[in-house]
Length: 186
Image (cartoon, rainbow, N blue to C red; front, side, top):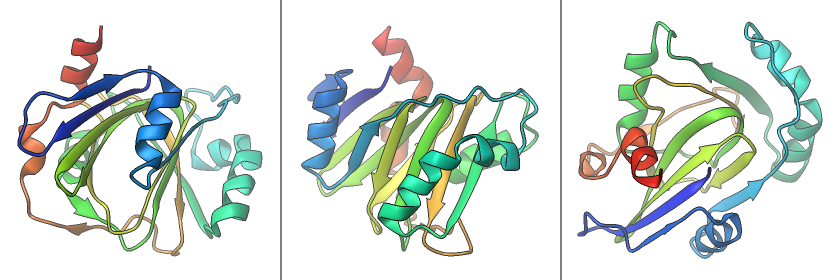
């Protein structure tokens, strides 16, 4: 279940919560964020490494690269037993920007993108079949939860891959995390 919660920066209560993919797409597009639902058709083996994941999604990768010119693609897959899950979660939870677009296609599981756009904060639970494109320079953070379970293809315009500039703003501490949003939606 993809879910969008939209807040004003000074409110702890969302002014909009929706699981309607068309409404989510419209709200995000109005703010310059790309969102689409694509079929993630490949079944991945439990021990699939990055190379196998990228091969399974070669058609989707080629489509995104052709449109966006993304020369570098990787696959990030984290499960609840990943040895670096706590350190990675803390790093991704810190508000940051990138000098390039952040483009992701979720092929398994889910994660929470939080976007700080002017006086608004948008929280988007992305799950399998969700594609998101966040423009360069957008302040955001990401929560994969305390027991992560997701796999996403990541597209980059640079050979270095994921490079963040951290804002030092603790705004993320004022909003629900993935588990709280999931609990509220059920």
